Length: 289
Image (cartoon, rainbow, N blue to C red; front, side, top):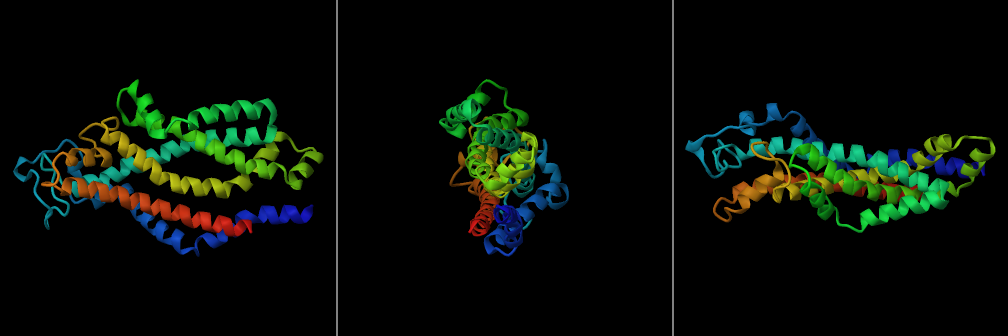
Protein backbone atom coordinates (compact mmCIF):
# COMPACT_ATOMS: atom_id res chain seq x y z
CA UNK A 1 0.00 0.00 0.00
CA UNK A 2 2.80 2.42 0.86
CA UNK A 3 4.42 1.93 -2.55
CA UNK A 4 1.15 2.82 -4.23
CA UNK A 5 0.95 6.03 -2.23
CA UNK A 6 4.46 7.04 -3.24
CA UNK A 7 3.96 6.28 -6.93
CA UNK A 8 0.59 7.95 -7.18
CA UNK A 9 1.61 11.06 -5.30
CA UNK A 10 4.84 11.34 -7.26
CA UNK A 11 2.93 11.88 -10.49
CA UNK A 12 2.52 15.67 -10.13
CA UNK A 13 6.28 16.07 -9.50
CA UNK A 14 7.32 14.03 -12.54
CA UNK A 15 4.65 15.78 -14.56
CA UNK A 16 6.02 19.22 -13.64
CA UNK A 17 9.63 18.21 -14.25
CA UNK A 18 9.00 17.09 -17.82
CA UNK A 19 6.71 19.92 -18.91
CA UNK A 20 9.43 22.49 -19.59
CA UNK A 21 11.38 19.98 -21.66
CA UNK A 22 8.44 19.32 -23.97
CA UNK A 23 8.87 21.13 -27.34
CA UNK A 24 5.12 21.51 -27.88
CA UNK A 25 4.64 23.10 -24.49
CA UNK A 26 7.67 25.35 -24.88
CA UNK A 27 6.59 26.65 -28.28
CA UNK A 28 3.06 27.29 -27.02
CA UNK A 29 4.41 28.86 -23.84
CA UNK A 30 6.52 31.33 -25.84
CA UNK A 31 3.58 32.33 -28.05
CA UNK A 32 1.17 32.60 -25.10
CA UNK A 33 3.68 34.61 -23.06
CA UNK A 34 4.15 37.08 -25.91
CA UNK A 35 0.38 37.46 -26.26
CA UNK A 36 -0.03 38.03 -22.51
CA UNK A 37 2.83 40.53 -22.33
CA UNK A 38 1.50 42.44 -25.34
CA UNK A 39 -1.94 42.59 -23.71
CA UNK A 40 -0.61 43.68 -20.31
CA UNK A 41 1.65 46.37 -21.74
CA UNK A 42 -0.73 47.40 -24.52
CA UNK A 43 -0.52 51.17 -23.80
CA UNK A 44 3.26 51.00 -24.27
CA UNK A 45 3.35 48.51 -27.16
CA UNK A 46 0.53 49.86 -29.34
CA UNK A 47 1.78 52.47 -31.86
CA UNK A 48 -1.39 54.54 -31.40
CA UNK A 49 -2.86 53.75 -27.96
CA UNK A 50 -5.39 56.57 -28.22
CA UNK A 51 -7.02 54.68 -31.13
CA UNK A 52 -8.34 52.11 -28.65
CA UNK A 53 -10.94 54.64 -27.52
CA UNK A 54 -13.43 57.03 -29.16
CA UNK A 55 -10.98 58.34 -31.76
CA UNK A 56 -11.68 59.33 -35.37
CA UNK A 57 -9.41 60.41 -38.22
CA UNK A 58 -11.47 60.81 -41.37
CA UNK A 59 -8.37 61.72 -43.33
CA UNK A 60 -7.07 58.14 -43.00
CA UNK A 61 -10.24 56.08 -43.41
CA UNK A 62 -9.67 52.50 -44.66
CA UNK A 63 -6.08 53.01 -45.69
CA UNK A 64 -4.28 49.74 -46.58
CA UNK A 65 -1.28 48.44 -44.61
CA UNK A 66 1.74 50.75 -44.78
CA UNK A 67 4.85 51.68 -42.86
CA UNK A 68 2.75 54.10 -40.79
CA UNK A 69 -0.10 51.65 -40.13
CA UNK A 70 1.16 48.05 -40.37
CA UNK A 71 -2.35 46.56 -40.45
CA UNK A 72 -4.06 49.53 -42.08
CA UNK A 73 -6.85 51.65 -40.62
CA UNK A 74 -10.55 50.97 -40.04
CA UNK A 75 -13.79 52.67 -41.03
CA UNK A 76 -13.09 55.80 -38.97
CA UNK A 77 -9.33 55.98 -39.47
CA UNK A 78 -8.17 54.10 -36.35
CA UNK A 79 -5.00 52.00 -36.46
CA UNK A 80 -6.02 48.33 -36.71
CA UNK A 81 -2.81 47.03 -35.12
CA UNK A 82 -3.31 49.18 -32.03
CA UNK A 83 -6.88 47.98 -31.67
CA UNK A 84 -5.82 44.33 -32.13
CA UNK A 85 -3.27 44.72 -29.34
CA UNK A 86 -5.90 46.15 -27.00
CA UNK A 87 -8.32 43.47 -28.22
CA UNK A 88 -5.98 40.84 -26.74
CA UNK A 89 -6.69 42.40 -23.35
CA UNK A 90 -10.43 41.81 -23.61
CA UNK A 91 -10.01 38.24 -24.87
CA UNK A 92 -7.55 37.23 -22.16
CA UNK A 93 -9.60 38.96 -19.47
CA UNK A 94 -12.60 36.96 -20.63
CA UNK A 95 -10.63 33.69 -20.41
CA UNK A 96 -9.22 34.48 -16.95
CA UNK A 97 -12.59 35.42 -15.47
CA UNK A 98 -14.46 32.50 -17.05
CA UNK A 99 -11.88 29.98 -15.83
CA UNK A 100 -11.70 31.70 -12.44
CA UNK A 101 -15.44 31.24 -12.00
CA UNK A 102 -16.06 27.90 -13.69
CA UNK A 103 -13.01 25.86 -12.62
CA UNK A 104 -13.40 26.09 -8.80
CA UNK A 105 -17.16 25.56 -9.04
CA UNK A 106 -17.02 22.71 -11.55
CA UNK A 107 -14.06 20.88 -10.01
CA UNK A 108 -15.58 21.05 -6.53
CA UNK A 109 -18.83 19.53 -7.75
CA UNK A 110 -16.96 16.83 -9.68
CA UNK A 111 -14.78 15.58 -6.83
CA UNK A 112 -17.65 15.79 -4.34
CA UNK A 113 -19.82 13.65 -6.63
CA UNK A 114 -17.02 11.09 -7.11
CA UNK A 115 -16.19 10.91 -3.41
CA UNK A 116 -19.62 10.76 -1.77
CA UNK A 117 -21.42 8.81 -4.53
CA UNK A 118 -25.06 7.87 -3.98
CA UNK A 119 -27.71 10.57 -4.26
CA UNK A 120 -25.09 13.34 -4.30
CA UNK A 121 -23.43 11.79 -7.35
CA UNK A 122 -26.72 11.26 -9.18
CA UNK A 123 -28.01 14.79 -8.53
CA UNK A 124 -24.80 16.58 -9.51
CA UNK A 125 -24.03 14.52 -12.59
CA UNK A 126 -27.57 14.57 -14.00
CA UNK A 127 -27.67 18.38 -13.79
CA UNK A 128 -24.22 18.44 -15.39
CA UNK A 129 -25.43 16.22 -18.23
CA UNK A 130 -28.32 18.59 -18.91
CA UNK A 131 -25.94 21.53 -19.31
CA UNK A 132 -23.53 19.47 -21.43
CA UNK A 133 -26.33 18.51 -23.80
CA UNK A 134 -26.62 22.14 -24.95
CA UNK A 135 -23.81 23.55 -27.16
CA UNK A 136 -21.78 26.18 -25.29
CA UNK A 137 -22.29 28.93 -27.86
CA UNK A 138 -26.05 28.33 -28.03
CA UNK A 139 -26.41 28.40 -24.25
CA UNK A 140 -24.29 31.55 -23.98
CA UNK A 141 -26.45 33.21 -26.64
CA UNK A 142 -29.58 32.23 -24.73
CA UNK A 143 -28.22 33.77 -21.51
CA UNK A 144 -27.15 36.96 -23.29
CA UNK A 145 -30.54 37.12 -24.97
CA UNK A 146 -32.10 38.12 -21.63
CA UNK A 147 -29.19 40.32 -20.48
CA UNK A 148 -27.96 43.63 -21.91
CA UNK A 149 -24.72 43.27 -23.93
CA UNK A 150 -21.68 44.02 -21.77
CA UNK A 151 -18.31 42.54 -20.89
CA UNK A 152 -19.53 41.39 -17.47
CA UNK A 153 -22.65 39.74 -18.83
CA UNK A 154 -20.65 38.02 -21.57
CA UNK A 155 -18.28 36.62 -18.91
CA UNK A 156 -21.21 35.35 -16.85
CA UNK A 157 -22.87 33.81 -19.90
CA UNK A 158 -19.76 31.89 -20.95
CA UNK A 159 -19.09 30.83 -17.33
CA UNK A 160 -22.57 29.30 -17.16
CA UNK A 161 -21.68 27.12 -20.14
CA UNK A 162 -18.17 26.17 -19.00
CA UNK A 163 -18.38 24.71 -15.48
CA UNK A 164 -20.03 21.40 -16.54
CA UNK A 165 -16.95 20.41 -18.56
CA UNK A 166 -14.75 20.68 -15.48
CA UNK A 167 -17.32 18.89 -13.36
CA UNK A 168 -17.34 15.93 -15.75
CA UNK A 169 -13.54 15.92 -16.03
CA UNK A 170 -12.93 16.14 -12.28
CA UNK A 171 -15.55 13.47 -11.66
CA UNK A 172 -13.92 11.00 -14.05
CA UNK A 173 -10.43 11.56 -12.64
CA UNK A 174 -11.54 11.61 -9.00
CA UNK A 175 -13.43 8.31 -9.37
CA UNK A 176 -10.12 6.59 -10.10
CA UNK A 177 -8.38 8.40 -7.26
CA UNK A 178 -10.93 7.59 -4.54
CA UNK A 179 -10.57 3.88 -5.27
CA UNK A 180 -6.85 3.95 -4.40
CA UNK A 181 -5.56 2.38 -1.21
CA UNK A 182 -4.16 5.61 0.21
CA UNK A 183 -7.67 7.09 0.31
CA UNK A 184 -8.81 4.10 2.34
CA UNK A 185 -5.78 4.53 4.60
CA UNK A 186 -6.66 8.18 5.19
CA UNK A 187 -10.19 7.19 6.20
CA UNK A 188 -8.87 4.50 8.55
CA UNK A 189 -6.62 6.94 10.42
CA UNK A 190 -9.59 9.28 10.92
CA UNK A 191 -8.97 12.01 8.34
CA UNK A 192 -12.02 14.18 7.71
CA UNK A 193 -13.82 14.21 4.38
CA UNK A 194 -12.69 17.76 3.65
CA UNK A 195 -9.07 16.88 4.44
CA UNK A 196 -9.16 13.88 2.12
CA UNK A 197 -10.71 15.90 -0.70
CA UNK A 198 -8.27 18.81 -0.38
CA UNK A 199 -5.07 16.93 0.54
CA UNK A 200 -5.44 13.64 -1.34
CA UNK A 201 -8.04 13.80 -4.11
CA UNK A 202 -7.62 17.30 -5.54
CA UNK A 203 -3.78 17.26 -5.96
CA UNK A 204 -4.03 14.07 -8.00
CA UNK A 205 -6.64 15.67 -10.28
CA UNK A 206 -4.65 18.88 -10.71
CA UNK A 207 -2.41 17.91 -13.68
CA UNK A 208 -5.43 16.91 -15.78
CA UNK A 209 -7.31 20.06 -14.77
CA UNK A 210 -4.35 22.29 -15.68
CA UNK A 211 -4.10 20.60 -19.06
CA UNK A 212 -7.74 21.32 -19.84
CA UNK A 213 -7.42 24.89 -18.57
CA UNK A 214 -4.56 25.56 -21.00
CA UNK A 215 -6.59 24.17 -23.90
CA UNK A 216 -9.74 26.00 -22.84
CA UNK A 217 -8.18 29.46 -22.96
CA UNK A 218 -8.17 29.23 -26.74
CA UNK A 219 -11.72 27.86 -26.89
CA UNK A 220 -13.01 30.61 -24.62
CA UNK A 221 -11.39 33.23 -26.85
CA UNK A 222 -13.16 31.62 -29.83
CA UNK A 223 -16.54 31.57 -28.08
CA UNK A 224 -16.13 35.18 -26.89
CA UNK A 225 -15.12 36.24 -30.40
CA UNK A 226 -18.13 34.42 -31.84
CA UNK A 227 -20.47 36.23 -29.45
CA UNK A 228 -18.92 39.56 -30.43
CA UNK A 229 -19.16 38.62 -34.11
CA UNK A 230 -22.91 38.08 -33.58
CA UNK A 231 -23.26 41.43 -31.82
CA UNK A 232 -23.65 39.98 -28.31
CA UNK A 233 -20.29 41.03 -26.90
CA UNK A 234 -18.63 44.37 -26.28
CA UNK A 235 -19.96 47.46 -27.95
CA UNK A 236 -17.89 50.10 -29.80
CA UNK A 237 -15.59 51.86 -29.31
CA UNK A 238 -14.05 49.20 -27.04
CA UNK A 239 -11.71 47.09 -29.23
CA UNK A 240 -12.76 43.46 -29.46
CA UNK A 241 -11.31 40.91 -31.87
CA UNK A 242 -14.63 39.29 -32.73
CA UNK A 243 -16.46 42.53 -33.44
CA UNK A 244 -13.49 43.75 -35.50
CA UNK A 245 -13.71 40.64 -37.68
CA UNK A 246 -17.47 41.14 -38.04
CA UNK A 247 -17.18 44.79 -39.09
CA UNK A 248 -14.47 43.98 -41.61
CA UNK A 249 -16.30 40.99 -43.09
CA UNK A 250 -18.86 43.29 -44.69
CA UNK A 251 -16.10 44.97 -46.71
CA UNK A 252 -14.37 41.88 -48.11
CA UNK A 253 -12.49 41.51 -50.36
CA UNK A 254 -11.74 45.19 -50.88
CA UNK A 255 -10.67 46.14 -47.34
CA UNK A 256 -9.27 42.70 -46.53
CA UNK A 257 -6.94 44.01 -43.80
CA UNK A 258 -9.87 44.89 -41.55
CA UNK A 259 -10.63 41.18 -41.17
CA UNK A 260 -7.22 39.60 -41.64
CA UNK A 261 -5.48 41.37 -38.74
CA UNK A 262 -7.96 40.52 -35.96
CA UNK A 263 -8.57 37.03 -37.40
CA UNK A 264 -4.85 36.22 -37.36
CA UNK A 265 -4.61 37.58 -33.81
CA UNK A 266 -7.31 35.11 -32.74
CA UNK A 267 -5.49 32.27 -34.53
CA UNK A 268 -2.16 33.10 -32.87
CA UNK A 269 -3.66 33.30 -29.37
CA UNK A 270 -5.63 30.08 -29.77
CA UNK A 271 -2.63 28.25 -31.26
CA UNK A 272 -0.33 29.30 -28.42
CA UNK A 273 -2.58 28.00 -25.67
CA UNK A 274 -3.54 24.90 -27.67
CA UNK A 275 0.15 23.95 -28.05
CA UNK A 276 0.61 24.42 -24.31
CA UNK A 277 -2.34 22.13 -23.67
CA UNK A 278 -0.98 19.48 -26.05
CA UNK A 279 2.38 19.57 -24.32
CA UNK A 280 0.79 19.26 -20.91
CA UNK A 281 -1.31 16.31 -22.11
CA UNK A 282 1.77 14.53 -23.48
CA UNK A 283 3.60 14.87 -20.17
CA UNK A 284 0.51 13.79 -18.26
CA UNK A 285 0.34 10.61 -20.33
CA UNK A 286 4.02 9.93 -19.64
CA UNK A 287 3.60 10.53 -15.90
CA UNK A 288 0.76 8.03 -15.72
CA UNK A 289 2.88 5.21 -17.20
